Image 1 (cartoon, chains in turn orange, purple):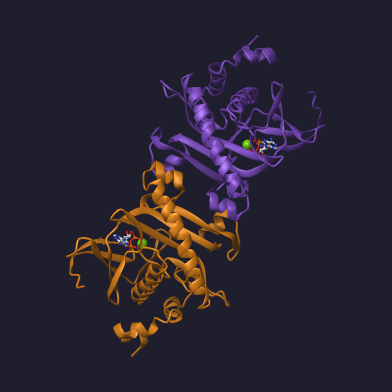
Image 2: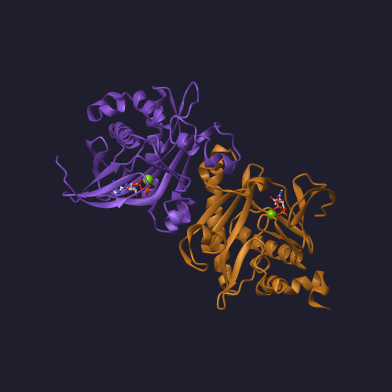
Length: 250
Length: 250
Ligand SMILES: Nc1ncnc2c1ncn2[C@@H]1O[C@H](COP(=O)(O)OP(=O)(O)O)[C@@H](O)[C@H]1O
Ligand SMILES: Nc1ncnc2c1ncn2[C@@H]1O[C@H](COP(=O)(O)OP(=O)(O)O)[C@@H](O)[C@H]1O
Ligand SMILES: [Mg+2]
Ligand SMILES: [Mg+2]
């Protein structure tokens, strides 16, 4: 279908969201802007928007084929995708397989420690409060979601972990952890936002090399290369060619 | 029974725990020492140990009669009680009815805000990590408790909230929030530690006056008087007489 962008609804840290001529549909545009540590660190990762758009759409299609309902409709161009307009549930879901990032400090774990069971965490999406960790009871008391919604969100999140973890293993990537957002669409909970190197930790299985936004967060260098490597592992690098020959230096 | 103290097992911030001639039984001795803010603030609250011993035992007996299994066996003297020796689960359970303390800052709530539903929180009992908030998945991954144990602990905690809230309402006290510890005893989960003005927030229903350790934490004055007032409301002040006439200035 031909969705016509009518107005910028929201500009976030990494994406813009546009209204379209269809009231149930918004267009997401992926930017190259990168932020970390609650927005205190800022920078640009060249072509990040293109990579994240492709990678996220690719994962969402895999998830759809595994019976996870998502907001994905269709890609519009290299940085833009049409998605179902949801009412975002202001709760971020984090799923962790291996200890990394804030968890290590919080629980005194070594980075890389294998968790005996995946850990699911909720954060209240609230910049002023710096996205505090919450549990299901906080979510119910604050009326951010209902009991049934929380149950669905947990169920989907663990399933997404299984599907993506198995998939990524085949291309020699360990899925360390990732962040999800869900929304309400016509009375149902569906997966929204993005799944990309911005929102996941990906480590090379053999070398443990980080192939995600931690390269930016921690100034590890080769940031753009890491994003491109994810594209390559997923076999999506040829696709970019179609949109953006500059990426390959042509 | 006559339990004979054989050895000091552990001295904590507020209590001492002694081994006895019976291997399944320890004696808890309540001290007047008070600490707050992860032990950074320290002081003495005169007769606190006597009040907490009486109050805690009183609540534990009420809970037992409401089918909550507890460690309580029998009071030995004004500061000492014989309890079942448990393997403490290193998780503190906090139940909240009204927003107060750390929750307000964390979630941007006014102190005194009525929560639409009681909130249950878990903290990993670990001084070095400053008792970080955790959820059931952290507890499982760290193998602090099993799924069945967590379920039992949640069920008991909400039931304890109902019983104590209703009970305290009758003596014009609002139960704002409280902290519990559970332990394993002969394969079962039972309530351990204490329930007292040290571990609860109690507000006078009419005046909202604080009758708990917040008077010490926040230097509100009349700390000893608040602990004594709880004793009076529960009708336990006459009991103290028996042990300690000094308390009443005789
Ligand atoms: N399908 C959707 N419908 C409506 N809003 C969405 C959808 N998917 C994601 N969003 C929201 O769009 C915004 C995306 O922009 P982003 O730069 O990630 O924002 P933020 O700075 O809040 O993280 C987020 O607020 C996200 O919750
Ligand atoms: N029934 C019990 N059996 C064994 N240990 C217990 C029991 N009840 C409470 N405890 C433990 O005894 C100690 C009580 O001392 P306290 O001063 O409260 O310690 P802390 O400074 O660790 O809070 C705590 O570590 C508590 O977990
Ligand atoms: Mg975002
Ligand atoms: Mg204690």
